[in-house]
Length: 385
Image (cartoon, rainbow, N blue to C red; front, side):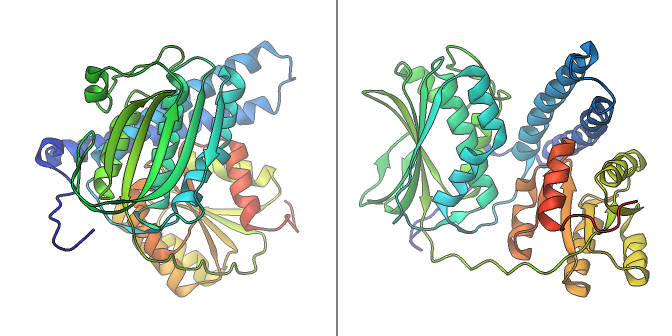
């Protein structure tokens, strides 16, 4: 954005009282933590059942319900957040994360429809957060799929220069923008639908409803925090939502990975979480130890070392987990860290952005997600228990 263009990332009409935001974030975080065992324990139980067992169907239903509740908790957590830290983001790469997500593949397999992408390779980098952009793209594409049963959603990018204030869904100042567009082939939106589109629980769905009901409200909130603007319009073939991101400079290269082995330390202040995660990792063949807090982690690493620390970033209080994450990266830079939290990764986007690309698991997660994350960081176990 030009220096002379005034901009308030959180307009007065979008501001919520800080005590309410804090309470909402705490409730969402606690809800996600409680769901952790509800998702992982069915995985343990499924291992002892035959594929055609009637109980397997019930356990899968429990897992699906838990994940839907977790999506709602994730969106509540993001709506309560008050950070607008920004970093340089490759818009194409961030949006592509959405199309590679297994949950989207499962959604298309279950409900039909298609998703297309048109990436402009010359699109400028933007100011924002890779995780936030990916989440925005994911919500937009699911909303586009909901607009018409079996319909088509398209994600695309381009660079645009606006020479005067543009009258979009909201006024868009003059400037250079990288634009993320999501379009559908559903019926045209009415003027009232366009006005209410980003309100909580408003929907123009004609068939399935694949989001929590807060998704587009989250899009609006995250766009505000990244200094982006929204434009909604009907086109000949359906509708489209454009997110105008301020352009930025070139992105920083990623740090090269370090060599790892197979000793894992699980850090979580909730005993039931430590226990079930440790059991799953041992079943996967890894040597595992567990501790409950920051000081215990430091004492363990000083004495025993580790190749990977799987840690909850919200230990007892947020500050302890963040301090421990910083200390590990400073004192033991060769140790891999896999972060977990009941909060979504986007809540920590500013911290993780400054610390590098640290792997992250949002609680609750399935055993397959845990195994895939650990397997990506460590080689095959050498000394299984």
